Image (cartoon, rainbow, N blue to C red; front, side, top):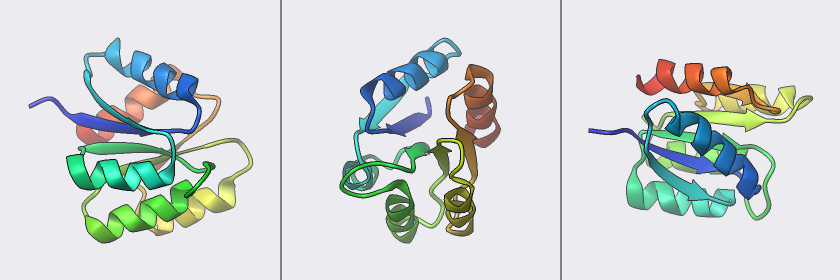
Length: 120
């Protein structure tokens, strides 16, 4: 079964870039959300295999969405995406169960390596 990946970022071009990178490498099942609120709803409905979750978003930030998703599903696999200089938030995210984090601006290989290490 193909892995389902939920990409959460308030910037549509970021979601597109991540999707393109993963598509080129054989992943094809994507869900999208533009903020933490949507991320939680989509997660609840679809139970994706992996969530790539931006930290800084309107309505509900990535840390709050992470906590909520982990409460619903302690086994959720979540990778945080953050801009440079958000180290304290990344540490908090890891404390709350994030598997890993990717720093923006993204490097295609880094996204790929992270996704492969978590869902194969």
